[in-house]
Length: 309
Image 1 (cartoon, rainbow, N blue to C red):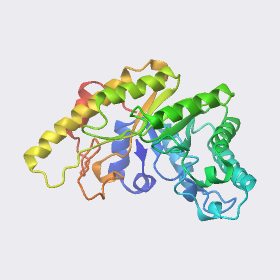
Image 2 (cartoon, rainbow, N blue to C red):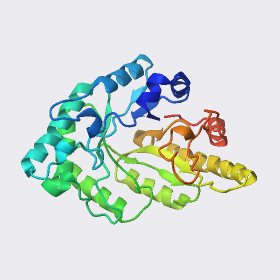
Image 3 (cartoon, rainbow, N blue to C red):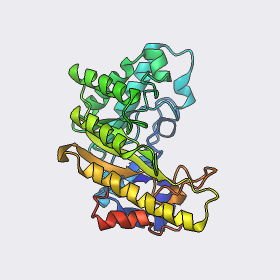
């Protein structure tokens, strides 16, 4: 589950339900660059230290999200006059310092997040524009050197659908592997809706990733309802459909080879905690409602004895 550090500190109801229902957490914000390194050579480790302590005391796995992303990058990193080597050095120091600080407490990382466009081209970011596609290789090399025991993931949205983006990611990651770069797995964010992607598409995407030899992490799962201006009876029907959708996703994950199953992470605890909570429509995407009461989707997963990650 994606863990909100503010609610972890100030809402007993939130954290008690979280530790009761989940055995693996991903920090929602506090490992992103603008939060953890707001100024040059100044790392704000207090929040992640508290979260690591919280998880260690309760034997809960903590997955690191995310080291390199094109968003939430502090302004000082993005100065337009920086030279390619300077940008590369900043990136490597950022990764090296964080991974070494968390070594032994965070044993897996989203090293690079969202580096490709939907058409399979490389996303133009501060990292790509200054140093080219080689930044992906360097990021994984740096993380591996900082903690050789950690599992290293590439994470992105849209990979749950076969097509140009998934093809490009698999081609590039397999190329890096062939060159000796260790990449252990792929995170499929899995921000999906009731009927998109289709089940056949989800199955095929997972098959392609599995056949390529990568571990799979359903890393940011939620299932949108889009219930704006829908009557109560229709909403109840949609909640049942949502429960069936969740059950299918968990069954799909459990059908993967055991050594390729990393886990399923829900992107939030309740509908009130969702990144979609302020949308113009009523997404209601998670397992608990705004009052932290279980929804039909939660009951469906419990009935199938789903592995809760």
